[in-house]
Length: 392
Image 1 (spheres, rainbow, N blue to C red):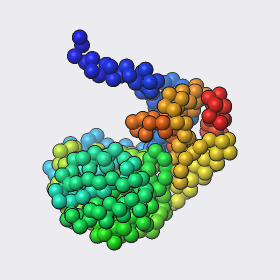
Image 2 (cartoon, helix red, strand yellow):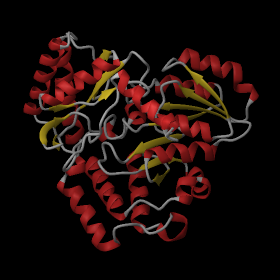
Image 3 (cartoon, one colour):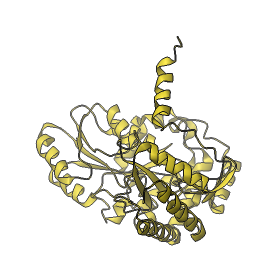
Image 4 (cartoon, helix red, strand yellow):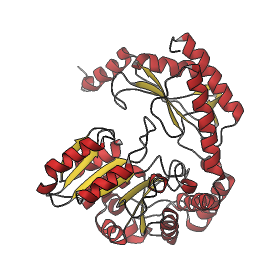
């Protein structure tokens, strides 16, 4: 008997359920149209919201940094990996986010698993939205603090938790995504902030899908609600709208000082490579110069969403360019995705365990780089496939 039988059976179970997938291979840049396994297809599954990943200014900044600084940082920040580029990026991000200080991590995921366990401990309580991103969930698991979960975006349920538990703890942290990546809805931040004031709690917002998308020039969900100074920890990613890689926490200088001593991903993993840091600086400068990129993103998103809704598709509760097309059955969701690919459009099917069972959906990610022809091709493919699979 194979010692790997316990995993072989699990993989076979995925195949039996019709949810096993082969990873597609992109032979080139992650643009609005890509070379996927040898076929040119419209790409509706990228987080490259603004097209910055392939923008000439961003690419040139990366190339120049490699020439000046080398391919890698060569060490963790606390030794000799703290290149001056990183400091320049953090100062620029703090200016852009209109917050006191910013500290960068190697990814948005690292921000959450590194920060949550560093700022909380025994005697504290972490109160988390039930649909928070996996990185928040894992960050909460790593903490020695107690945990509680409130129903998704339900401020009444959040207040119930705070009423019942606040008096028993030193510090209480309310953790939420700014934009929820599977449904595209926005957290009720004004109500959450009001509850935090009432119950003397700290607020922690993962704005990975809000940064570069919502607010003035993409300053994020906090800016969208005009809550500057009212959210204690703002996490952002540099791999989505910014188009590169990495993450950051916008907060107070005291928090940054502490994380530089206790943020484990910073202490035990090499710093961001110079090319990524310089490219990110250029992306942020572009956002600060003009709103043209975010305006194009929203124009494309509104056009695509309206077109699908007119055809009879259920696009859920999204209030952002994330456009879920609800299918339900997991196997049908993946069949739909495969049929779209055959029609020249790549949209990833999202099924359990990423989303709850029975809520499979195609998650279309619209970009500022999409042309109207790209979107029209995708809309027509959705129309024909939806009819063939009896979805519309």
